[in-house]
Image (cartoon, rainbow over all chains, first blue to last red):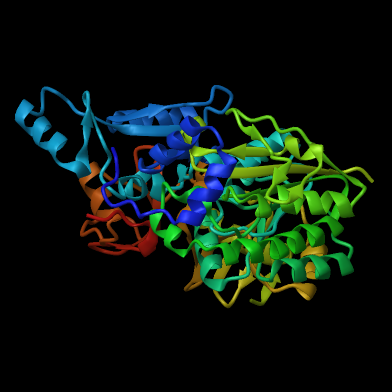
Length: 351
Length: 151
């Protein structure tokens, strides 16, 4: 289903994306997929029920469920609702087809807007609505997400709830967020998902790390899902694009780098730091990681295993040259796997 | 937010009430009180001393999840508290039919005589749907707004 009112993309944004996607057909595929809303993906909350139980429940509601990644049955795509051909006449199906809000493909019609969030299973915390690409940073950790975990920019809690489910509510997660409004959303999501191993703190990220360091708190795993320009979220919220400007992209790396630098101070030797953003801008991605690697000789980038095919981090952007190591980072473009756009780097502290 | 981690005897007091009300005999983890009534459950690996150390250096907004509320010397379990302890709940359970479940999840009180008094656990098939307050001809609903079905 194509959107009718997709915002006109700004020339500078297009120019930058064209530089990143130099092949004409690749760039065109990117532009084409932006006009299509992302798939409706959910993550089964394994703290409350098994993926099979959830799948059965949702299928009983006539929802068509796909589990796109073999090794991650908890991750599901809701393709729509199966229309019972005996209950509905041909004319009604044709009317639904004509109505853009309720497109019918074969015998499957789209869910109504908001239907995923209003379902009983969602209200009871049996699943979390989360975009596929946003599930990847925690998948990157695999089962290593050990010991004491810090989620530095935690709200609204998608990755925190995913990490808690991954470690079955054991160990401890410190979920930090600076905005009180966003803390309310975070707390509500943690409650709905039955996350009992988490402490929510309210502090600006770098200041939190400094205070934790003073008291000798050290973490085995740190997630820095950094504030970013959000270029990768164009499919789900085209309106956020209206806020896009190059000034933000030039200013954000300083904040992002400060967050990572302070987080590294409280990362244990052999600990893992995952840096992620939902933007394509190299300044906020490879640029930040390159600087961090230059300044910290006790760090190495690790290759990332994902259930989708990412592209390697880039080593040239405008007048900048990045280390070859940067190719171990993962760039996720929407046209490659029918997701949103994302960037992930996995750093290991060697000593 | 000022937090008070309940000591062994305070936790036992809560547990005794839960045993009387619902047959619950064990709660793993720390119980934390915020304000006079609200009780949170924390099941992470950090101990009491470490949480206190953390509290000294950074504002803590939540420890674990909202689990129950003390009300008139009784315990009212939150919807999520019930889901954590559901395997231990043995009594004061009221089962709904589908129509009642829809009413309940919309946040409405149920005009029925449950034959029970005080706090009851509401259940529909395998789903636990929170706590209600049963009185002679109705069950009062405590489902928070954010968790209600919208018609």
